Image: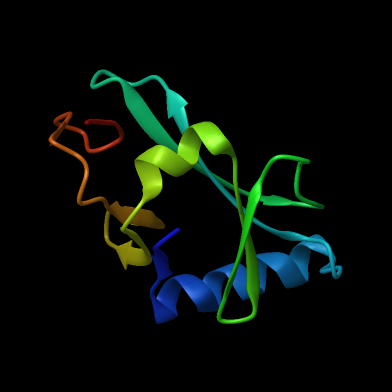
Length: 109
């Protein structure tokens, strides 16, 4: 699976893992969830360990967990972490997305 974390995203995930009480099994879970006005939305969380059927990626020393449903929608995605006057958070550049909603929180393929 081709998934990329930018240097900003790597720095933030490492910080979140440290706050979470980093263990050898912990990692970043990236998921696609049904919802939003365009059909799908992204989810990111720190997880203690992978689930049995997760794909496990190692990116810049960070374990990334992706479930089988989400994997089909995350191929080729770039995850960044942005800070602006409007707030901060993870952003997603998905080459598979064919559209999105006006607020930018969901997408369609």
